[in-house]
Image (cartoon, helix red, strand yellow):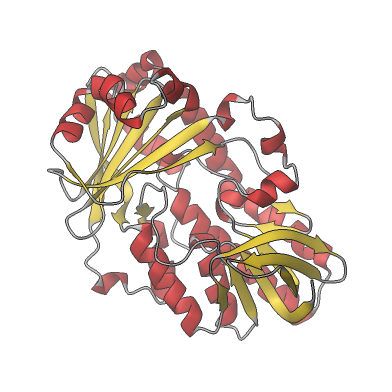
Length: 383
């Protein structure tokens, strides 16, 4: 390997957190490199609902949401495995947009802002001494490296670096909260544009909401054990388990699946994670993943990028110690997100069985005010 270039900031991972972080820093004239394993645009497993708390932030980055005719989502429908339903107004509301469209737009803004984006590139390792050394391999190319004053990890739910560094949630794979799979479709179906649905089934739940082009995101989470019980067949799982909920049965039987779907991901973990590793700041799912049923993961990724960008900018301008940067990030991240993650883990347990899911929905039906209280516990305010 040979050293080639030194950057102010290196960002590993080009999802929402990574791209938005890179854009903010590049717009302040810092020299930023971003590594992404895929080539834009591409689909990601994601619920594709964003809380309205992120609207102004995305517009500030340069995403013209007001011109994109994105669907505004104002209500939530929650159904239990037994079919009983509860509908409520969302305190802040949200909007729907596919990661295919949003990530591509952010990628274009990043490039236009001066970010060096290395697509189809795998980061092999990161080491930290005076500066960071990032070893990487582009597709079809030879291993090489760059250096950076600051390095951030935005590599999602699980990556080769998590495995290489033997992070805690990787080394305890038997934990229940580490053993989920997620499946996503884009479908054409009959569903209200302003409504997001959260439909529960045995050992899992499924969200549906509109994105763009008269399509709807249909994304569900369940345990790896449930998939195994159904012959490791997604089709069989949907027929034998999801369809026991009448609401899901109706959607599955009256939808047209878009080409290229489903997409899926395994070994999804909701276990606690560290927010720094090897001196790196971890943003988005790399630093902590909230249960998808909370509907706030995308906004948390965007908000974390803002926290990181502000602290990194101050660090580079004042030449403060790297230890101070790390400590300030951990402290501000915990203050902003730790309560939401704790609430999300608690909710995840309530939806762990048919009995508790049925009880939870019935409780909301009996005491509707609890729904607004619960939603606010997992969401923030505009940032």
